[in-house]
Image (tube, rainbow, N blue to C red; front, side, top):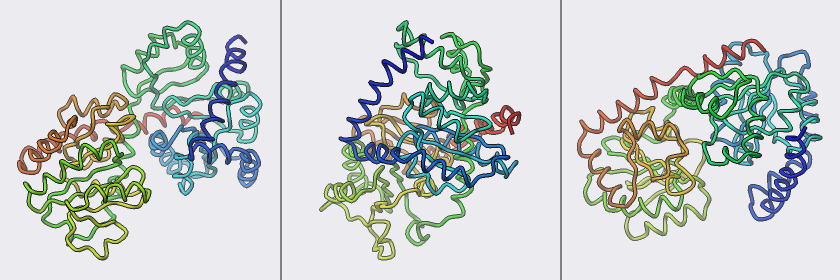
Length: 424
């Protein structure tokens, strides 16, 4: 009881106040706050169209990145048992908005604010046969509401943030109590499993299944190879750098390097994919290139006139674009943390990124194996690109190692299903 009092009378009021203020200052947060006003009305309407006799599994992901880890599990469930209903919830607007057209979901909603009343109401309406939290986005009142109904709970691709707050008595005890309320914790690595045990998580079944993101990129690669986004006339005979999910912090470092590379490497082509292809972001890139290199937007590609830089002004196609690359730069490493490095790795190419990679176990693994290289300065960008675009043997060897790392780590989905089959 003490843990619930602590959470509901101290933590929840603070979180509510923080989210409310943040929603006034941030456009995405504001849209998420507004959408939650009619959340239960929309949820009841959507659930009412489903047959109550069917098995129903609820997946919760914080955002779009975590949802990528859920997708291969959902796809395999639907392949094996098409009648199983899938309810998907998100915390962030980016995950929710980018996934509204996901075809394998029966219902897609925001998770409501984590009050006891909201949580019980959400669980009552959804009435899942099982609940799956992806990675570490577990909301305590929703977990407790599930336990009250004896609904099996899973944390999949489980990781726990290894920070000093574990040693703070109240916070550490609270975190332990939350994870000890889960039925199954399916971790990414043996190190994660050991860490859960080390901090006192002893009640759930804890097993290593690996990271389902490897399965997802493997599957998406097969799909992307059937798509032709850029005419062969444009890419044939070119040496291609794909810059994926770049932020302004990335671009300030790498764009001067890209400009310099064009004077050294013949037939170079750069496909640049901003993380947020808003008009102001694309215009900022175009201004920086003005007078140095010409560029063309992807939406105008029918008028291509040998421009050396293609700026992608649409979303959802980055994975397919990596297939054209000889070298990839993955954005985010000069900001909050590097984005998905497995997407270029599965195509077999050297990977460059900024220095902040501690958020990504797969980036740390690829760096350790010598296929991912950190960029600190513009000169680093120039040197690595020169190395891999002029030495084909080095590039192919490095790319093959990257591909083999992905191939070696597929299979987490099947392991996950072996635990889920009990509730299907």
